[in-house]
Image 1 (spheres, one colour):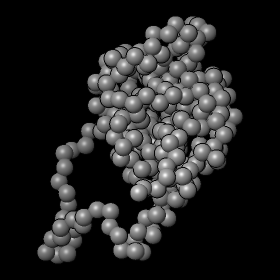
Image 2: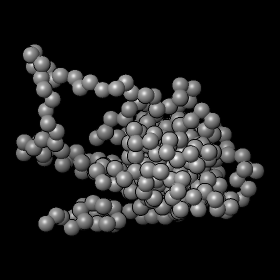
Image 3: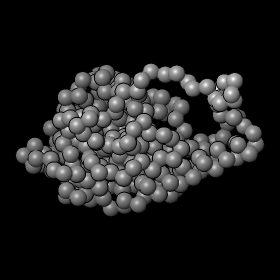
Image 4: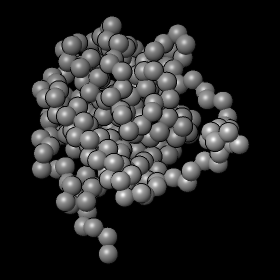
Length: 245
């Protein structure tokens, strides 16, 4: 029998984070679009923890969202001003400029974030033209990723939690929101990683292996694993952080 789980944070009950989280209200509505793989297999995913920290947020799972009723209802709702956080050449940099007031028109800013690895996020993006048609936002000058248990594919790439933190900082500076508890997200991120590192150290001490060792060459060096050339995440003309896992 497996360990009892908390079905809010999806961690074992003995390690549940919920008791240490104070949901924070925001003027902005955050909509996390979670890839199924992020839910099923990613133990260090940050999207769900970020959602638990934000009272005005929701999670929708899927890959293609053009036919997703709840997502499309949010996009069509005349009371919302929907945007997507995504690195694109035509994105509005909230660190340098404000969203035009006439565009907002008193509507509620509703931010969609793709919660997946960068490889899977690209697939979600391509599969959802309705998201591509939304105004895009980004921020610049963010701190380097604090992820120590994952390697980001290039500078500027952040976890979903870090991207949300940076976006809230930018919205707060522009007077579009009030970021009342900026320490909570980063503290939770640090504690989650500290726990993962302790697990890894314990596994190493007990001689457990998470992955099969790579074959070695005659000189004893692990042979490189061939793979396709990685595509750039951010356009060369822009350096806009966005979220992953």
